Amino acid sequence: MPVEVCSIASGSNGNCYYVGNENEAVLVDAGISCKEIELRMKRAGLSLEKVKAVFVSHEHTDHISGLPILAKKYKLPIFISAATLKGSRLWFEKSLINHFAAGEEIVIGDLTILPFTKLHDAADPYSFTICCNNTRVGVITDIGKACDNVVQHFSQCHAVFLESNYDEQMLEKGRYPFILKNRIRNGFGHISNKQALELFQKHRAPFLSHLFLSHLSYNNNCPKLVEELFATNAAGVRMIVTSRKKESDVYTIAALSKLQTNNFDALVQKPQLSFSFD
Image (cartoon, rainbow, N blue to C red; front, side):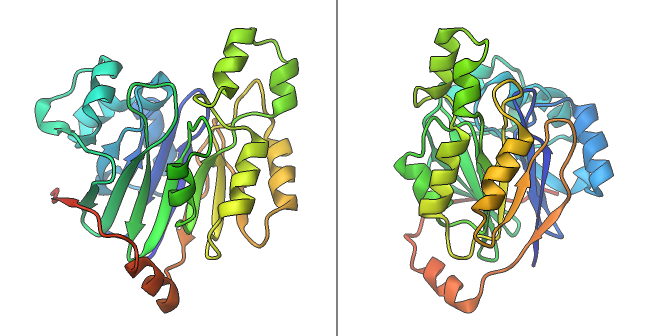
């Protein structure tokens, strides 16, 4: 069963990522309006009726601003940590709220979602991998640095939405106050183009096929700069720079070979939570 992925929105003005198969899908974050999510998904040929849940990475506005209306309108289960929910100061119907723990897999149909902790200046931040038939997609943004958790999960993915937030020179020479510059680059904010490239070069899986450069800063980065940097170092991987203004194309991620499947079978088994949504 093929896996389809699409960046609905990516940037400091809003983030939303789609991962699914022919039967079900999930969104990671909903940081743009419900109306805009509907519009962008329709243009991409994706159906919200197939979306069975929204997974929330952390409580910053650019990741949750569209969530209340989206969840209420479509009765979408929300997977969110207790600390993130408290920090969000948002209200949802209790029946829609589901809490999770780091390292605890959530099974929705043929999708297995694994939350893992990361370094970011939020109450209880997470990134996620989504697996279907041994094809694994990572949504790994808002990371202060490539900590051990990030490296471990990045290195297991066939496709990754990876943060490439800022160009170091643009940030240094830009108009941001010194305290904000330090917040971005202090190891609990975001990673730079250079840091993202280093993570890719050192830790990418041999079967990584697609890298989506994500969460670009509007003031401290340039899509063309990111595209040129990663295209030069692509090593056979398809590089896509995501946009804050519009959805990406929908990409189909190839299934694992038998050898790769055997490699994944060797991974440590994790506890699971199973959910079935009509």
